[in-house]
Image 1 (cartoon, rainbow, N blue to C red):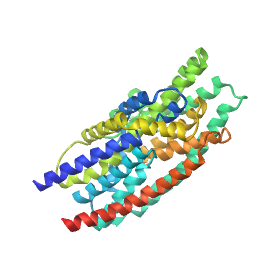
Image 2 (image 1 turned 90 degrees about the vertical axis):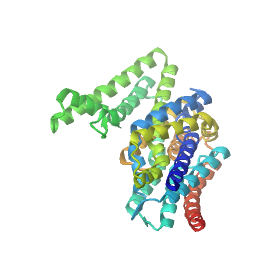
Image 3 (image 1 turned 135 degrees about the vertical axis):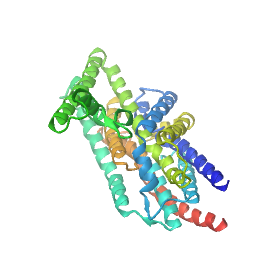
Image 4 (image 1 turned 45 degrees about the horizontal axis):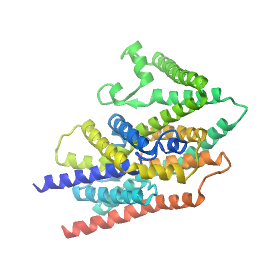
Length: 398
């Protein structure tokens, strides 16, 4: 009976964490540039991003979920008490960020909370995983901001026609989209990209080697070319409408990617508890439940953060918004592929700032940038310390 109650409390904490993430990270960041460019309203953005986040959680959430659940500490698994403390600590900090209007880095917070509880429990630090995660976190502002800066410069260059630059960028996005893995396209529980699935459909499952690579490359080019061609036609009909449609498509892709990445931050600590209790719940079922939590957060709490990101960091036009979302999509999918928890607030804010500096820094709030970076670092340290101390306190009382 005690075990059932403990698991129920942990599940509620996990759902609260999913709500907090949906309200403050996966629900607010993907469409913030589009809202800043007046391509979609705040409330409509919150509604759409919730649905796309649910889809991403269900189709791409497995990698990060497993990493957060089993790879942040070594020597054992989190106990039910440690998992509850970690989830409650992280969710509370993220919720505070939502209501205060500051984008707390969810991945920083959850990682710090899980590590803090795990260390307090007596488990060991997973140094190789920490190095991998820290490397990505440090690279994100430079890579994402740099790509956004270069892309915005390209789009502002009068020597490059809009009808050429934007479809070319759409082609690159199509290349990435054709090769990201979806569980429903792969055999069994493994994922497979659209291009690979098309190649296998033509050559058969038994084909190997160069023919498969060549067919996959051909399918990638065809898929990306079709995507770019549709956008070119749209731009030829109405340039402003074509830009807006591309911007909304990018926001949708980032929202989908956010669901695939962020749901693992809420569900990861819950997985070891289910295994310890010999409770057999299929991972897709858990991912769908976590996605519903993200959906609820997006619909009820995301508008506040969408407004903060779209208006407070930089005054974005369509070109700069496109420039911000392209690296955000690529980085997010890389994190999903490698199973590394990454903060969407860090990704989007870095890209927004990079695209803003392409216009000479116009509209970029440096004070807000400094406060945000301090909030990210503080959330990591605070989550680790509170979770560590919280577990010791609860364990002593029990």
